[in-house]
Length: 139
Ligand code: DQA
Image (cartoon, rainbow, N blue to C red):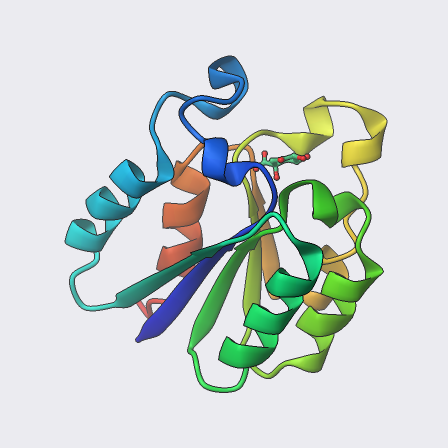
């Protein structure tokens, strides 16, 4: 299985940014952990703070990978373009969020991406990504 985690804006600051919400672990530390946990799957990683780069990456991987795990971060709540990209590609996408967006501000309750995904995993910290990976592994 070939999967990719795509992270949107400000998620490069994980471990540093608002640790009370997003935790202390950096994403590279976390990636090391999950790569050794899921040995039978290839887990690629891409992060960008730029909306169009996220869309380009979705197009690039969206016809050959087995699954995409997408945390579009703030663009989740604003981007018709990323929603359209998810709807236009073949590879199934699971949307993830570290924090429980539904217990936060109202503007975080809307996702322009969720309607086009296979499913959404919200609020389990970095474990949200692990649950999403598991969703692509047949039991
Ligand atoms: C987030 C939630 C978003 O509302 C926020 O803008 C983020 C991170 C999360 O993973 O909890 O940057 O996607």
